[in-house]
Structure formats: C-alpha cells, structure tokens
Image (cartoon, rainbow, N blue to C red; front, side, top):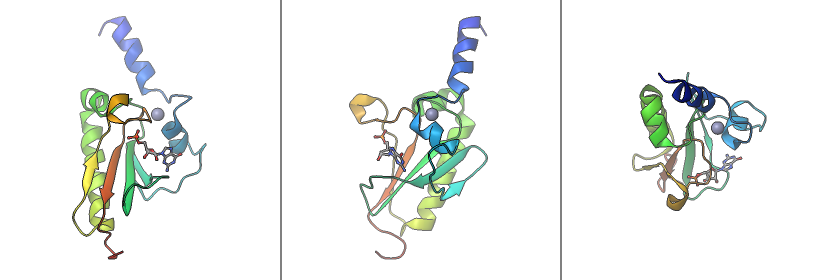
Length: 125
Ligand code: 5GP
Ligand code: ZN
C-alpha cells in the first residue's frame, strides 16, 4: 500500500478526538449500552424519532457506512447482526434500519451508525 493511503488508513482507525460517538465508546460520555459485541455497541438515541429508536455503531471510527463497508466489511456484517438481534428483542418484528450518509442525507454524527426504528415495541407500547 502506498504511504499516503497507509497514513490515511491509520488515521481513520484512530479514535477521533472530537467525535461524540468515540467519546461514548471510550466512556468519556457515560451512556448505557443495550448491547456490546467485539466490534460494536448499541444504545438508545438521545432524541428518539420512533417508539423504538436505537443506534448501533462500530467501536472503530469510520465516518459513514460507505467507508465502513469499504474498509471493514466484516464489522459492518457484525453491526447488522447486532441491529437485527436488537430489533428481535425490542420490536414486534417490523422495523427500519437506516444509515444516513452525508450531510445532505441528514447525517449529523460522522461516525458510522445504524438507526433501528420501529413504531411497534415488543411490549405492545
Ligand atoms: P444522524 O443524524 O447522524 O443519522 O444520527 C445521529 C443520531 O445521534 C441522532 O439521531 C441523535 O439524536 C443521536 N445522538 C447525537 N448525540 C447523541 C448522544 O450524545 N447520545 C445519544 N444517545 N444519541 C446521540
Ligand atoms: Zn468516532
């Protein structure tokens, strides 16, 4: 790999000092995790847009799902498993998985994340 690409990859894999989700992972911002796997964590969205609104994120910093898919597809696969496991646990079976990608698509936190959204919670609420 050429030196510039190598340096970029190294930088990308580092925790980004200003990234709010990296701070959640490092526990600098205390947040209850509803799930944790080797490479992912999940927690409730602070501004829920649905009855069930969870976020699933990779522990490694990648700016969006496209970069995650390109650089760490096995982690994206793990993230999808975490998301669908949580959907099984917290919803009645109908849910959306959403990856806002790019500012124009509504992405506000530039650390890849899946939204798990549902209007039918498992407990019937
Ligand atoms: P985006 O708009 O980038 O797709 O989604 C970012 C999501 O992160 C938003 O739904 C927002 O409410 C959520 N969020 C931003 N900061 C925090 C935080 O500090 N804690 C939690 N739990 N969620 C956050
Ligand atoms: Zn980050």
